Length: 432
Image 1: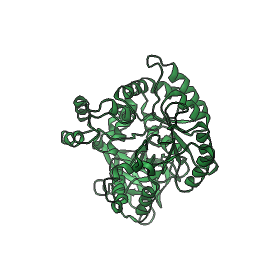
Image 2: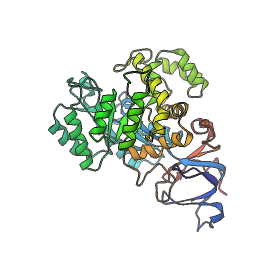
Image 3: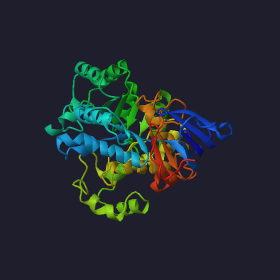
Image 4: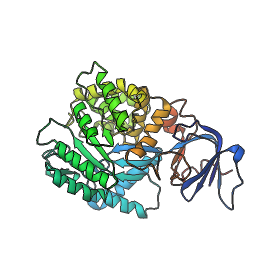
């Protein structure tokens, strides 16, 4: 397949290629070249006229939890349900989804289901159960949640569990928060052992943190990515952000702030926030009754207060640009969709917030594509870029995303997606 009359934004540092020709062979990009170097189509290869559109890498949701959405379904329907969620992600331009923790049996079942499914859907990458302390987050004291985590206070046991798990998952996730020495906090020596085991197997480790100290200890332990914006000790000062930025940049550690998580928890129960989402195109008036009828609506989140979440959100929004300027590699993830209509919309909201926080558009796109792929070690075959040899995942837009973030996150500007070389826009965009 050849796509012509398109501007390619490859997701790297290179300038956009105007009036380009993109060749897809066997589900991968095989050539990206200027129209001046265009070649006749070979055989019966279809040629698609992109009509002056903009082709960007397929978006990545680098931090979500799909398994929780499936618990209300019968056990034999859960894989199919999550598969439908992956299709929903693809419909908003998200070609890869990173599930940061859930029961391993469900995630393996989804992978098996997708291996024979014929419909198009986003590709799933998953961590399986997370590592946490005894009755630590997210298990707490609920035995029904035991399957979503390895609860441990022993480094040797954690090491062996991580070695076994690494053979079945795409990366490993650890929860490292709460007070030092608390029974529900993963011990530091266990965290180090898990990282060592994962790296021995060639797998990345992402660490959920709370305080700056958690972040620093996770980085010192060899974490590849930090999940969630940390809570500052002094919200009035940017000094901590400067220090953290220097550390993350120096160690090449990825940072996923999940801005939309803290925004939602901070505004849970606030009708004005829902009106804002409607005004900015992330919900409709018809969505509001469904959102307000959810059991979590207006109730305190079990781990983080609205006040704390407001501090984390405001501080991250104020300091994320300086982190980018310091060279921190930021990735985009939404975590939860408490007050958003659906998980895919939460990722689009996260991209909007990254732009609001002052990240330039190339950095926003990198956060939602390349950096998210690199964070879990997928840069070889699924790099989140439009480059020769990589899986042909892309989003076709009708306007320049570098000119306005709305051109990327407003679905009215989405022409269609390309997932492993399979286009979704044949009917709406005729062949040349």
